[in-house]
Length: 296
Image (cartoon, rainbow, N blue to C red; front, side, top):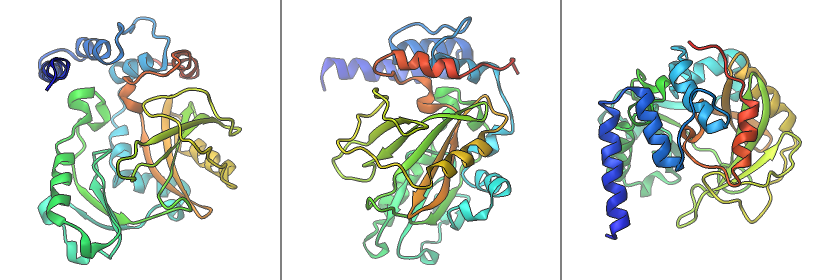
């Protein structure tokens, strides 16, 4: 282990400990400086990432907790736009040990309802290592985005396990279309690809609502091959408008499988507001789109 790696791990542990003893505003200032390398301006936030920290502290809506729960969000979205946009559910369990593996089909996806990255994708049940899958799910079970990121919607979300239908688009994987909406208006999106390829970094390609590729990166590099605009892209924007209505900001994540649109999830704090834009000017551009509401 290099000195820099050791130093980073010590600082990260100290940061995690501080989350339990510091007031949220002070903790977020410290974490923002640690992750972004510059001070957090809460009095007069200008950038997108700064404004996301402001929303964590000063715009708390209890109903958002249901919208980040992968089970409850499906019910909410189905009521707004219809069941045809919902990926079928095979089962929901209150713990990892309760999972009924026998009832699941040969292909499925299983994940923790309050987690974001701990997904188990099963393409062949006969070759699935269930013990390894359970380990991954248990790790995701312990993730709490309020504890270390102060994303308040997750504070009271009860973790559960959900199994869903396995889906695949024309690319051989499942590209994710993540649409940034501000006061019910889509402004930009990115396509996430290469997420399930072994030894391959995930790619993020950003576009405006006219499908012009935007010249920046955020968290992951661009792909080498430009993404094609879906034929029903305007319908995706319509759905994003409906699901984001009345919200200062939310990212609406959708899938598009052979011309059929499916709901993914709602994300209120993209990257938790602690991943830089390159170039930084785009942090200010997104910040201009995000008009802060009155404090709640």
